[in-house]
Image 1 (cartoon, rainbow, N blue to C red):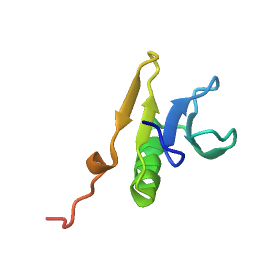
Image 2 (cartoon, one colour):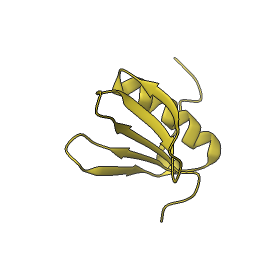
Image 3 (cartoon, rainbow, N blue to C red):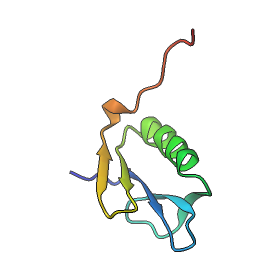
Image 4 (spheres, rainbow, N blue to C red):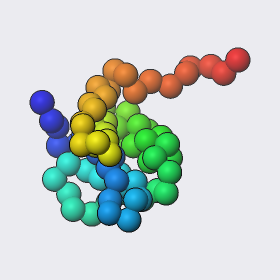
Length: 76
């Protein structure tokens, strides 16, 4: 079930990676690198207790539940 706070990552026609909110046309952020867009989207989704939804180049959609958006509690 998609929530209103879900964060989406997708690539636009200019090959930029966009981070957007569900139901909003404006982007939250735009990145040249997918990894940077994913890191930003992960942090936003984690903070909102939302899911991160990635729209891959091949058309597939990967949902990341909030419980999978974890960060290490300590660095060794």
